[in-house]
Length: 149
Image (cartoon, rainbow, N blue to C red):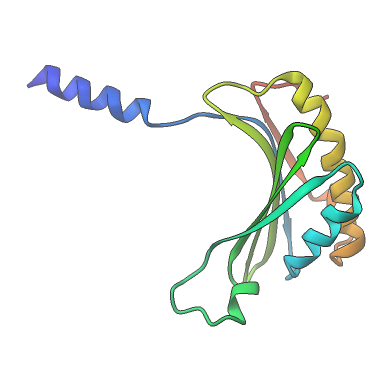
């Protein structure tokens, strides 16, 4: 019995995937339309292959509500590096999160050195296109198992 519990516990722990990389989050005190993120990404010349995904909302949402009370994610690439911008909107405002990460192993430092300056450019573009005053001053950055200099 004890052995079975240890095996089950080990499997549960193994199922917890650690995420490493660079994560930036900005909480904005007002609503911004997620579509301006697409425009912001398009304005940064190094950004390629932008894809949008509606991530989640509530089942009773009308089509008008999906732009207001939901999570949207934009995936893009810079060279060979994947980057993401997640936009969560609700009654409290908007949370914009940028990240480039890997699961279980840290991404290469070379990839982080490629993506971080582009994240800065994306933040400048968001300030311009999304009616946000200097989003960079709101950003909280976390770097896990990589160096962010």
